[in-house]
Length: 202
Image (tube, rainbow, N blue to C red; front, side):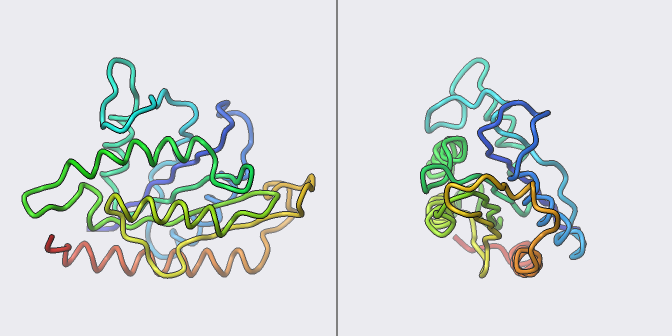
């Protein structure tokens, strides 16, 4: 079966009509994944959904996390995109991580969480320092709730501190970003393929 990937855009911009640098970075990764034979089925702008605070998989009437959770887990690869704010990953991304905490109590008979055998990578943008810290936050949290993180799993760009140029404003994608995106996609696809053929034993 061909591998499937989904992207989460955890921008703070709730208006889907408002452009987002996170979308621009996800697009760079999507191109790299397509070159490896993997299509991104959809990019979800999380801030447009009513994802309730909490640490369960269903926080009651109106909570849109159960539907998003199902869409995420229907894929082999997760592209987790988000901006840097105040030197760390933004609040929308943290909300998603908090809701995934429920995976810890949703194990199968071998003790495997729903995310076992699935691969996660990061797409991070910002105009200040914090890319390494943000990816560290993401990867530790995702690994805690069962996701597998490949080598070279983050594609990021940071602009000048207190600058006015965003990633989406660049006339062309920097060469190192494109090169890194190809490495991220290649490693993720390789690892996801291995896990699909031979799942973790638990």
